[in-house]
Image (tube, rainbow, N blue to C red; front, side, top):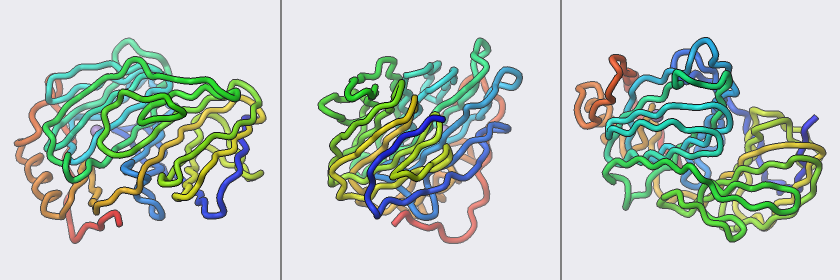
Amino acid sequence: MLAITMSISPDAVLIPTRDALLGERMQIRRALPSRTQRMIGAWCFLDQAGPADVSTHGMHVAPHPHIGLQTFTWMIEGEILHTDSLGYLQIIRPNQINLMTAGHGISHAETSPEQRSATVYAAQLWIALPDAQFDLPPAFQHYPDVPYLEQQGLRMQVLTGEWLGVHSAVQVYSLLVAVDFEAKEATTASLPLRADFEYGILPLVGSVQIDGQSITMGTLLYLPIGQHHLSISTDAAARFLLIGGEPFQSERIIWWNFVGRSQQEIEQARQDWQHGTRFGQVAGFTDRLDAPELIGLLKTTR
Ligand code: MN
């Protein structure tokens, strides 16, 4: 039994993930956006994709567009091939990050490479771009080496922002943090949090105990601003993801693969994709994802 114990605020909220499909057949767990919590800092989307068996059928997410966000892929097991309209072709492997800045518009596909492991497992996140960077030209970066530190029995890979004096090189535009925690055996730790950040914790391996309460995979723990410490103890080996950030200041609409500032912006992006303009071409694909119908008024995040 893998378990983690932490002391948490009474304001902490347990958010169940919901099942969704990625591509044609890959079952994933979606933690954000949820009904109770749309965003954590600028993090506006969090999927736990896998672990899934891709030995027979590989993953296939056909070309689709994005605006107003950065996609952030953290590979836990296996490989994913990223192909985009800027011409980037990049295999991402365990302990590596792919960061795609959509800005004004980009399209990409995600598939399993021909030579691959039997299992694929990744955390896929979106970061909403602030107003000043909303319309950036699209970009793609691959980070093969992620900095880490070891302390109090925990190996902490710093995926985004700063953690205990270690800085990630990943280029983001809001005050954000993301850390992958791994305990190889039972351990106890107390770590400082920023009181001006809100946080989310998602178990990646095993079940989690918080204040004696067991949390299985498929549950996101939300911690509101005002926390100063994270007390962690594990009974055994465990792994979890911590994300956090300054509460996002602007309203956003999250619809399909778009993050927009207004309904009009989303409608325009949908129309541009359906008409084959603005988002370029992803070489090597004959298929593409159709945008769903857009009916009625879309909800903003706040
Ligand atoms: Mn995508």
